[in-house]
Length: 222
Image (cartoon, rainbow, N blue to C red; front, side, top):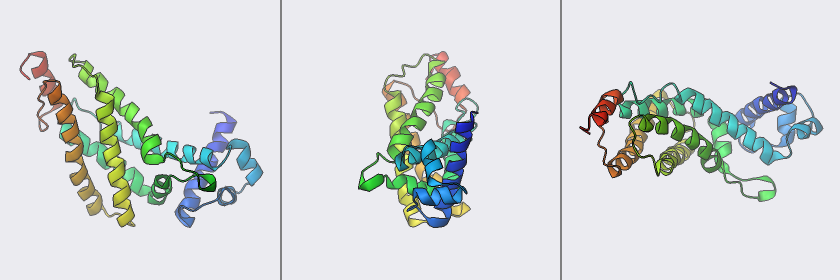
């Protein structure tokens, strides 16, 4: 990692800490102070507060992806279980830094300008990554994947939107509340996936391992 990237990462770490202690209304001065640095040095690495915002959002996005990737395995697990595990992992990440998620979800930039906001702008990047995984799985049995990205974007967007609403009403989610959130959201996402597959003429059981369903599709039984 280049030295400049390391410094940017250190400032993002400081931003996480500043948001956790000061709430979502932090300033660039807050971040510089938390990092034990100065605003001029901070501005040498970030063009403005919006640039820092994007870096914070990308950090959370990367953390989410790295946590859901091991669980997002449609081949060994029933797809509904795999989705629930992925959403549970995502939920753990955002509730480890709930103030950061709230900061990102506000979507307001400098001087009152509007950002696109974390749920839309950075969620799109997560959608692209998840689409690649799903396309590999479906492509292994020659299922037409036209329109797949739209379905994934809808699913990711639904989870993010539900998260914003949930964390607005839940200051510090408990394990029980996290489990309840996953139980409520997972069926919605599975419904989108199931509807997409049925439009392709494919009926996959949500409660049987995906490799079994894939074998049936190869045999022409699905």
